[in-house]
Image (cartoon, rainbow, N blue to C red):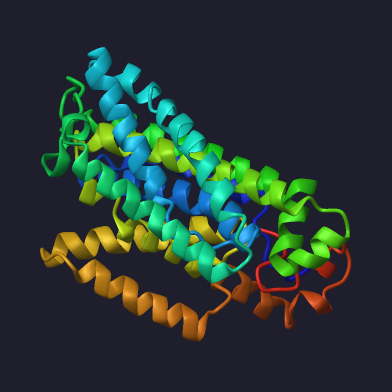
Amino acid sequence: MKGRLRFSPLIWVAALLLALMLPAVARDAQFETIAFYTYLYVTMATAWNIIGGYAGYISLGHAAFFGLGAYTIALLAASLHLAGGYGLIAATLAGGLVAGLAAVPMGVVALRLRSMHSFVIVTIAYLFMFQLLAYNLIRTTGGSQGIGIPQPSWDPTFFNIPFYFAALLLGTLTILLSAWVRNSRFGLGLLAIRDDEDKAAGVGVETWTYKFTAYVLSAVPVGVAGALYACYASFIYPQTVFDPLIDLSIVLSAFFGGMGTLAGPVLGAVVLQPAQQLLTYYTGAAGWDLVLFGALFLAVILILPAGVVPTLRQRLEGSRLEGATGEVDQERLPVSRVAGGGEA
């Protein structure tokens, strides 16, 4: 449709090619570090969007999966005496496996709750439960002293490159996973649940199974991201990997770009994470990123409650999705009328 904001496959491919070429044309350690963290948050915001954006279940406990992934790779390296390097990076998949397994009992309990407030509180409780366990299982986790992860013996000028491409690969695979969910019958069921869970159940959507599957799927990439972070940082503490600020960053990225869209969480992470990293670096003072996030959160809620992507689309179209015609996901309109329920 003419004038409609679409993120065609060509735009995604162009963005990926640009990301692949950037280390060759802009060799700078600070840039590579910022890009690494940005790709991690692209991964986590996109994964979180599967349960938070598509299904409408706002989780504020996904940092628990991040921390579980980080401690998984740390304990795996210590128990098997693994050296740092490509093998350890490949082993970060174990972090995703543990996060996915942990999401099973958590989802069984949390998703039985139909009250959104109760779900949010339970997920926060999970986060602090794992943080306390990491503090108190001192013999296993090192407690507040933390635990180290072997670093690769790469040349310092090359050190960031493998982590850069590993994070880029993880982000790309997570976006593909989200795109598959968004365009599948499963994704349609999640959107139906988000709009009206009772009506979705009435038309045959197995609501609990759909929510549970989305919750587990959203946990796995976050666990891998946590493991990859641990390999890069080489030392982890409970307060840094089970950090509520991680959840705030994930959710704000999705809110900023547009929840329930494919491109929204990616855009949010690409804008907010470099801003946060640069602000911390140039001000040299901790806490300014919190001020930035707080101000942005208020701005998004007041000015762009639907997020950047849905708002731009609405303004280009001149109306919301109800007024659209043609191939506009007509099958989805009855169950996805809220902002962001259109395409990516």
